[in-house]
Image 1 (cartoon, one colour):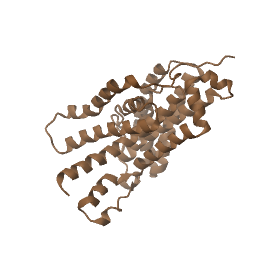
Image 2: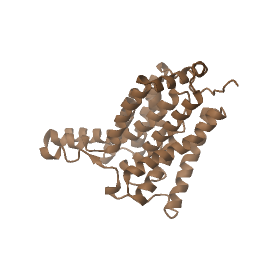
Image 3: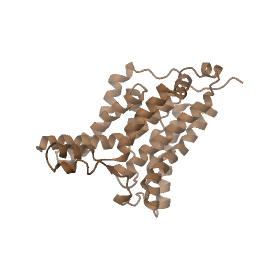
Length: 318
């Protein structure tokens, strides 16, 4: 296989790997915002998911249990956001900022608590990380040519494929089920939805907690697949990129997925350029995903329309 095809395969492989945590988190944002609750606390929820995943993964040794616990950790901190915004009608942005301050701080505290005061968790053994799927499928076709290309691109952790499956599940729930209709109704006109017997508070709670769970899975996929431990800088802007993907994707799961793939490609490109020794300042390379995020938002956000009641505090008339 020639070097250009090998380079393309490497970039695509890294793109899929780095897109998966964004997809999980963006799907959480899609659910929350379609129910009318802005969740800019995704970054903090990812941080909790990442540290809980690394703790359970290291001490228990079961990657799937660790992955699930990471999601539950994100859900637990999302409960704070739900209580503040739904029960107390707090400003959604202020509450989200608080979550983004609490999450990384609590994650660092838990890391130091379980790893003898260290700010970096101990590495998880390779066999205790999430499994790699299709690792041997394409190797049977030989080490060169198109089979080698497929092997590099598609030998991915199970979390990558699960992320794409969840896109279809969330799409089906939102647009093909009665629950999805209620979610979208609450996000557009909560008072009208309640006159038809829909419990707006219950729907909002379900979506915010699901948002936290998915963001927690995104964080756990970082510490159980992308790398093998938790560190203070592991979740560094991915939650905000996922939020940008929600907006760029038009608050739809399929649109958010495509946006995450774009941002994942930017991340993959920066990693690839750094790995081949191109003489570009590392700070400039690390800026690529965030610069593309800003450019995309500037160009496309004007035509996007959020749900009508998104971010507006809702209080029942007693």
